[in-house]
Image (cartoon, rainbow over all chains, first blue to last red; front, top):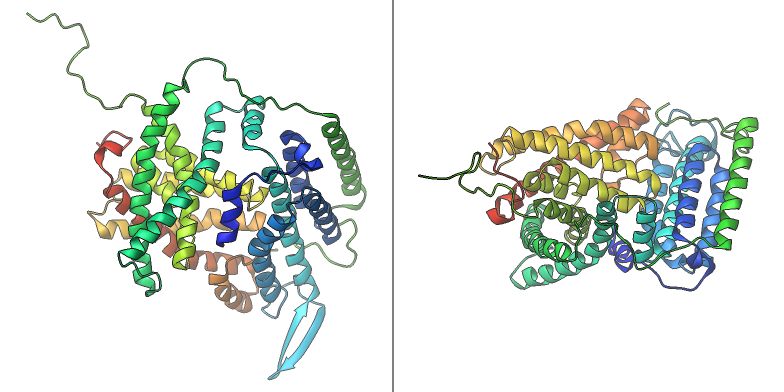
Length: 284
Length: 205
């Protein structure tokens, strides 16, 4: 994963005033769960492409398209290229029958096959849809709202703390590792050295980072206790997110589309629109 | 004549005050360390994942449930942000890693004092971990090649066997053994450098 992807988690919440931002976090996480589950149920490129179009439109509405496209380029594109090159290509994927393009080279047929390419496209577009839906929910929801939603959803407050503390700690530790890295380079650490030396470099970077983090753990525990973290009282939050009319509209659309999807599965199976392509189970 | 009440004796602090809260605070640290290791791997351009070493470290210094919870939380955060929902199942790998690390720690193999046992433990963790990795790869990625470092092995095995399962298993073995071996060594080395006052578990019997 590149530093750009880390930058996205580091930046976390993207403050905008859009329709998606104004939705309650619960609605966005419900949408994320719903679209992810149905995308993994259908084995149909048309369904996943339509879902991808929906989540991308929402990303443009939320004005986070730059984040989304960057993450997709970093995470999904390499899998698409590897998958199409190997499974869609001439490496012997057992279901390959129909050549989309083929050339003869030194007596061998090197081609790109429809079955393998569709297989890779379905699996990677499923990934693209769930990643985009996840970013839509995460990047457009304020961390304080996330905490309030977790408590309202009756999750243990210790879990809510751990989740939010991790999100807060990631940028802190990322900054710290940059400082440690600069310090070690100034002491002669060579990151362009051979493979073995670079492995050794992990230790000189990780020991100060880890010991510093553990030291801060003790300070953080005292700070939490002094604020009554373990006190046997009901915890309250500064923010109190409430469902609005727009949330109910989105939930109604989700319920309606669930009905449509169940009808499609009932009447046309898990491959409702893709004609002439057989359903391929992984490893099958 | 002493007037010592029944059951009282010299004060021994096996569990420091706020032990439980220290463990809870350590869980996000482990999750964040797993994450930040990715930054280091990126800087050093190493062909590994190393996103379970902090799980192993947490298990060594604070116990199996702290390591497992920190590792699982790391995967939950990644699933809800960069990897997409199905990737939360990778969290079970971290729980598995915490359990197996704990077993090796209990029998005294995870220590820098016995390098041979440590290396053997790392290799065994890597080999055993192929089973859950393959199961998750089957359900989430359709047994596709997802890691460029071992894609050529995947292609070679697929070309000779025409079986995506064999290709996935063999490329996983090649990726997992060095990854888990180096992760376990790193966890043991960092834990050995930790001052005793930071260790959040009673000494091993």
